[in-house]
Length: 287
Image (cartoon, rainbow, N blue to C red; front, top):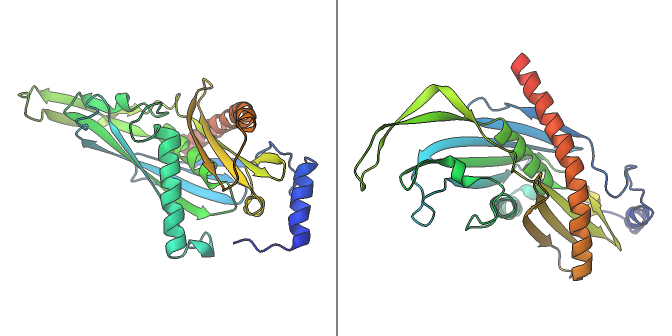
């Protein structure tokens, strides 16, 4: 919990009302974003993202599996988040477990379109090797190293960067099998397919403080929020998921305005993130 005096609370709210936040940013300005890729050599792809003092890592592990009977033409993706107790004292014990579960669920909804996969930002059909029999299962793990607000957006950015860094081995079906048998497959050690992230969205969280809403809220600003709406939007401007937090209700007209703002802000975030990912991967190749 953030301990603030009444004067500090009024300072935060007053600054946001005047479009001048405590750290000098305007309402719709992100903190500096830094990306590093290939941080976990054992993973198929990984990335570290820092937004201000919020620091997170995402890794992707690919394993061959079998598609579900309900979706034989799609692969599977599972997202898990761990909040390190060293990142924040409140992450110790049950507090960290509850936040980890909340973030995992939110990322699943924003990036995968819920349990059914409808409206998914990650193309699950690209993970199928043999329909109904063989597919890739992606296990995405997020780790919160340091927390200073806006964890969901930072983790979403780290997952997008990690997927950009992901190489999936080429698979050759060695022999046709009977309809009720698993086909034999040969996994290449040399050929890798780059994961297509063109449709993977970024997550933009709009946090309402007083009468106004801001992006990339710090921990202190989040402590003063009445509600927050997280919207995942892809490069084409399509909404892939939406989540609301906080007990205060929002008028439909306000939500529509938030979506419009998120659409505008997400393009800036996407451009910045793509630029940082490209620079990070160039640095990785040089080293």
